[in-house]
Image (cartoon, rainbow, N blue to C red; front, side):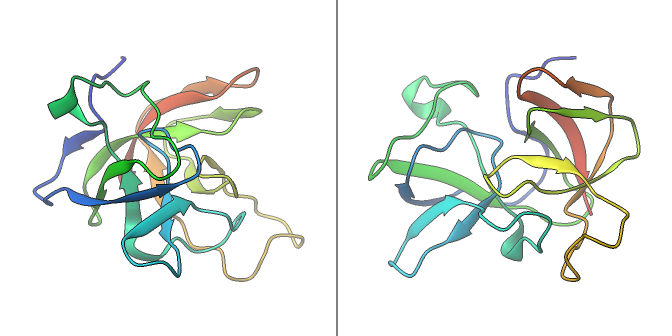
Length: 146
């Protein structure tokens, strides 16, 4: 099922900042060293601090496919465990219900690897609530924050 909003269930208020780079709603974010600035989470298979996810700017008439550009105002939320969200999945992934999702290193999420090459600091960001086929291109997937 396709959703028209990133936030499916959450009582968390939106936050506002400045985008560093091109960011799409549904991407996982991290703060930069500049006040109020966020960027796509860069650490692949590493912990996402603050559970920050870009959301759509519906007040400006923008949907989940409208990107935020560098230096533009961006809306995001700090989601809590149990919140349901619509997230961007990295290309090359085939996600099944129940799969653990972690940062793909570019703001997108990917399936958690269970091998010895994985980084020790891996922490599940979300659990997939629907199957998503992103084998040939990025996709959106409903998930629950872990």
